[in-house]
Length: 119
Image 1 (cartoon, one colour):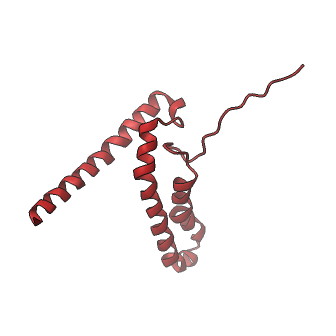
Image 2 (image 1 turned 180 degrees about the horizontal axis):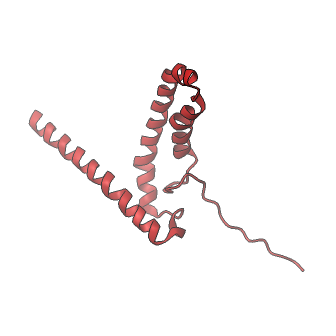
Image 3 (image 1 turned 45 degrees about the vertical axis):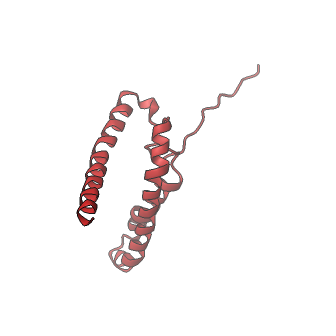
């Protein structure tokens, strides 16, 4: 039973490693071929973002906040508390809560509204 668990965990680790290497490459290649699609994710990107990326980024936000609290005395002594807060708490929180679902850039998706002119 223990050998099956070891083989299964090795398979899962290798699968995650392969996905981490392949998915960003394919997403980057697609966005470079058509930059207008950068903030227009499809259903697959939205599902992957909602089920995998957002929970991971929420965990990163919580861990970053804890790490900032632990290291804040050293950051204050070093004079870079603002930079540490930005990197450890603010950026992960924005990637978790502000970014549109499936988007790869850290910005909201805005609709372009054209105003009619009356003359």
